[in-house]
Length: 378
Image (tube, rainbow, N blue to C red):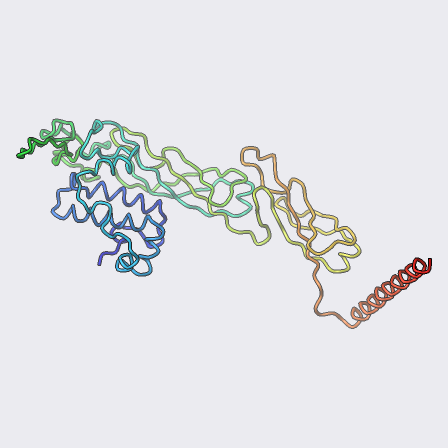
C-alpha cells in the first residue's frame, strides 16, 4: 500500500504549507496533459488522494494511526478528488494555482511567454531572548533557484536559442476535434511537444539540463529589528526562486524562533521575572538588586510585602518594533521563601517571635471581650 508522505515527498511532521507546496510542485509535473508517461494518470490520482488526506487534520490523524484501511473504516472517502477522471480539472487547477502562473488545463490559457513569478521560500533561524529584545544582524544560509549562468535562463546551450514550437506555433496549446454521432467536439490541451512553453530547445544546456535554472547556496545578512516575538516573519524581497520568462523572483521568508530565557518570560511588551525574598525581608522591607534586560537594577521591597506581590519597573520591557524607543514594563513577582533548615539560634528567635505574636493576639482578644461587656451591660 502506497505511503502518502512518500508520494508527496514530505516528512511525517511536515506542515500544511509544506504539504501544499509539495503537491503544487508534483501536480505540475505529473498532470497527464503535460506528462505523457503511461502511468502519469495513475500517479496523478495517487497524488490527489495523498494531498486530500494529509491536508485534512482529521483524515491525517486517522491515516497516521491506522493507515488507509483506517480511513475506510472511519467512513472517509478514499477515492481522492480526481477519482472520476480529468474532464473538469480546469476549475480545480484554477482555484488551486490561481496567481501562480499555473496551467490553464482544458480552457483558456495565458501567453506561454508571459512572465511568471518565482516561488517564495522559507527558512527558520533561532535567536536568543536578548537578541529578540534589542535586535541583531544575523547571517543566514539558504538554497534557491537562480537563472542558469551558462544559458542565461533560456535552457538552450550557449550560442543557441530556443525556437518556436512547430506543433503549436508558439501558443503552448493544441486543439483536437473528435467526431461523434452527437456532433464534433473540440478540446484544447497543452502542447505535448513543448509542454506548454511555446518553445523547443534543440541544443539543451548541459549545466541546467534545459530547465533554465540551477540550485545555488547563498549567504546573506539580515537585520532583525528590536522587539520581535517567537514565530515572527521577516520578508527578504526577491531572494526566493527565480521567475520564468523574466518574471520577478519570489521572496524569502525568515521565520524566527526565540529561545526561552532562563530568567525572563514575555507577554506582549511586558517582561516578567521572579524574585525570592526571606520572611525577614518581607516583614522589614529591603533594597534588592534584580536582573533586567538593561542590566542589574535596584528595587525597593516595602515592609509588609506579601507573597505574590509585584514590583513594576517602568520601561524595562520589550520595545515596540515600529518605535523601539517606546518599551513595555518589567513585572517582578515577589515570592517569600520559607526556610526549611534553620540553626538553633534561628529556631529560638522564631519561637520568641511566635510568643510575641501569640501574646498580642491574646491581648487583642481580651480588649475585645471587655468592649463587648460594656455594651452588653448598657
